Image 1 (tube, helix red, strand yellow):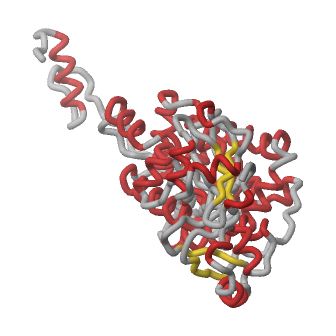
Image 2: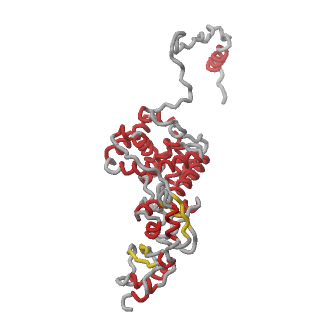
Image 3: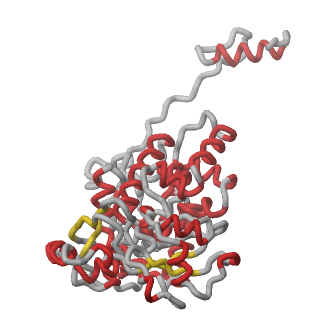
Length: 400
């Protein structure tokens, strides 16, 4: 940049030289003001101690919870963020009051499993509240986008994380395997985005979307929780609301009694593991373990058709203390009586032949078990009774 000659340049020179003691054009010297000592915030006799700079500022609504890397976020100082958080607190305590106790009850059943898994991966304990907003802690929850389970995995992501997703077994519904996979996935997202807010936004809307957003709008910005808040207008509505919704749930579920909820005592999620060598329906497992059908189904939600898969050995959960009883009784059940039937919901493009191959039964057995079904006009969503292994005896078929 060129400086114009004359009085303007002289004035600039004067200003520059003034900082070093004066001006050479004969005008009065420019002296900087004398330094003023900053007043001390604490008197010599003060009993107050300065707070450490890294101490998080936690709202009173969260002060009873142990502070971790998620709850130590500077966003708790942001009034606009906290305003939305408290809107969700109102939602969880008022609008959701008829069903939120069910969420809390299921969380109490699973929290020991979830807490220990999060701890084993070095993740913030407050992530235990994530399934509250994802699924209401229901292992069988299914979203409109077909995300499934406590942690609401989509099928491709679940398979990438090593979970089995088939017509007979969906490990997204398995509280143990899905929690292990979710912990691994959350850890990977945090390692990539270096911010729990960005990582959780990626968990909700997909990491690809967040990557593209950062590359386009903030390629050189430090990855911080505040950056999520600045860029959230570019995210889908669900993701924009995701963090305020989560913190609202943390406040209410973290201290339910102060928000009007009583949580009944729950036995922990405990069980005995037993091995089942081949296809067996859960009602047979319940009988062999001398347990209620509902209890076995509750412990094994991953078996979506009510049976273990054929031709391979799998692990099944039975109530604590019932493992030996099961092994003894199961050994006495003939192979052809270990499966009774399952109910199959017809999917798009399926025929009786497809279903027969899936369950390794004959089409004739399917037709005999479903005499009112017209094979050429299978309706999507229709329920088909599948006789597996034990099946229908040939001499008991209609018309035989």
